[in-house]
Image 1 (tube, rainbow, N blue to C red):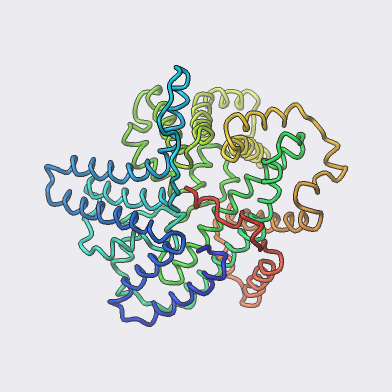
Image 2 (cartoon, rainbow, N blue to C red; image 1 turned 45 degrees about the horizontal axis):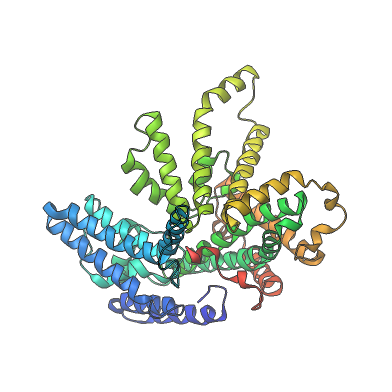
Length: 492
């Protein structure tokens, strides 16, 4: 069930209405049933995977707390079980293909080279969320939850179940524990949540799904195009993946807020970042902080030798790349971000000395703008590997973008032959302008879209909301032919 579907338009109001009406003691059971139904709309039998992960992590948490002497063995067992399921469904074929290629170098073959395995939607998200709970119990950060149904709701809460944000037990689970005592109806909270949902649908249907048509056209036929089209495709994918994923997070946060839950922020104007390190403080915050807390810091973090620190960075970002997908292009994407941060650290003193010699005004608008542009270009270069069908395709894409120079394509109308005709392209540009203004407001004032509207006069607030709803209904991308309507991060 997609957020931008008629099914969800029917499902969500029913869930909220019943949630507001049922006795307080039944709220948890109702949301748990709704969350399981929400997931079963994709594949009924895969609900058993969530249930298995939930039972194992809940039981292990209880046992770790009770039998401290066995807590390491219990933790390892829990990690092996959950990561084993994740490995089988997401990485087993990639592992077999890699082994097959290696053995092929020696004239050997595997008896079975590929298995038909359907990847469960959102398996990486709910697996990491469940594991964070077990790890927090192991570290003594929290006490285990005694009520199984509350914990099950924490793992499967439907707004953020299949694409995050990846919540922590000391944040979302504590809200679920207090759920029976909270006041349900709050006009400001409900309208704030609905504003976020409207904004998310605008980002998804007007911007992300529209630019996806251009991106798919270019990346699927990159060998036919020159610099301008390829650059447009790369820039378009940077926009697509941001709007696609940020829209899901906005809708998830809005839906949760309507029911009285606060989910963590997942994006904070990432393309205004002034360095790659700053980018990762702003992009997919729930995942980057997860890897920081449960992988990078346990490996030694930055409190070690420089060589060990760089090794920790490379390991963390390589694993992050692998988390996103079972392919060498995802590994390269992750490693690139690790290399970027290593290069930034290694050249820090050199850049500082150059700025001193040149008396550069590092606090000026022009300097920060240059930092932002350079950071965006580095991030966008890495996105090519993320989107391409493989490492070779990504390298060929980059090579053609350099050698097939065709600046005249900017003026001969070729840009309107990339899947979007002139009217559609102009709608996209208008959507990008709206997105830029909203992100600029957030970057400069620290205000979210819904927070800004909440401070305005009622005629302005509702005028903006109605305009966004009208734009989404009129200019949103609909139809079976646009398969991009599925959120990108569902596959992870």
